[in-house]
Image (cartoon, rainbow, N blue to C red; front, side, top):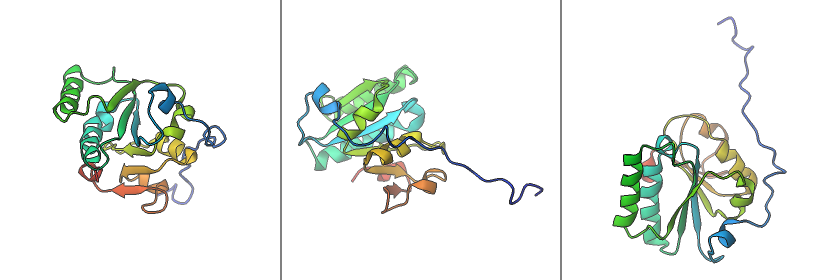
Length: 171
């Protein structure tokens, strides 16, 4: 009560100059045509951030856009081995293993965003995602699970699409 009106939340920001649109690296590096829709999840802890929801969304997307390619950009070393095997098996079961790339940890994110057509942010943990701000600065459309902190700067229908739960991430 003593601090009411005296404390202000200051959100993180990104240097937008770094993320201005330029030539992307994903299409050339993975030999994908410019007609191939690219859907990505970027995470330093994919298990915690909902990789399984991203894969479920990929299964749904691929039914509507069968030529889509999906990227997990981030460390899979942080995932439980059994969990990761289960997720890879889901891809095999739905014949998506050739359309899904585990790209690993990358330090060149500003050069990857220009090729991403949609960023999916399936985070369920309520933590704040810098990736969303970087994608916004890069002009990448975002579909995210609505969480208290995400909805502070991602406005449904204006700066992205918010869904109430991860099961709604797919079309």
